[in-house]
Amino acid sequence: MKLTVTTFVTLDGVQQGPGGAEEDASNGFDLGGWLVPYVDAGFGEISGPWMDDADAFLLGRRTYDLMKAHWPNVTDPADTAATKLNTLPKYIATSRAEGLDWSGSHRLDGDLARRVAELKEQPGRTLQVHGSGKLVQFLLRHSLVDELRLLTFPVVLGKGQRLFEPGVAPGAWRLIATRPTEKGVIGHTYAYEGKPALGAIVVDAQGKEELVTT
Image (cartoon, rainbow, N blue to C red; front, side, top):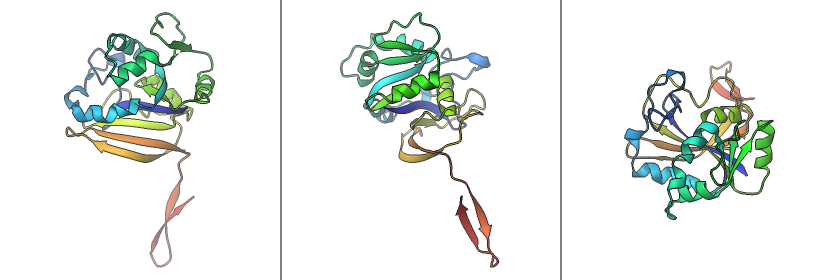
C-alpha cells in the first residue's frame, strides 16, 4: 500500500489544533480552531475524494481518540468518510492498549518504522494518515511517506507544531494536483521522489549564467 498523509496546514506550516480550541493545547498553544472560518463546500470537494482509495488507516493516539469520539456515531451509509473509518482496519501507533475498542483497531508498538514498512508491503491502495502530527514527524524522519495531501489555509499563526520540524529527512516532492476553494484554501498533492537534487548557478567567462544540477 502507498502511505499517504492528509493534513491541514497554515501558510507558515503549523498543523496543530486546526479544528478547535480543545483539540491540542499542548505547549501552551492557544490558537486552536484556525481552519473553521475557511470551511466551505469546496473544502469537502477536495478532501472528500482523498478518502476514496483508502484501504487502511494509520493514526497517532491523540487523533485516534478524537476520531473515536465522533465517527462511530455517524451512521449515514452515504457518508464515505464515516463508512471508511468505521469499517476499515485502523492501526494505532501507541504503547497503550486500553481504549482501542473502535471496530477494526489494532495497536502498533515496538519497532514502529519496521511495523509501518511491513504494513506498506500489504496488498491494497493507500494506507492513510490523517492529522497525527507527532506520528507524521516520525514517518517523515524515516522517509516512509509516499504522498502528501495538504490543505493549506490562508492564515499565519507564528507558533505551534509544524508539519516539517527540524530532523525531517531531506526529500524532493513532485506536485501532481492542486485546487483552490473560494475562501482561499488550496489543496496540494505531492508525490515523494527521493533525495533532493542539488545544483549551482555557474557563470562563464562571458558572464552567461548556467544552471548545473549535481
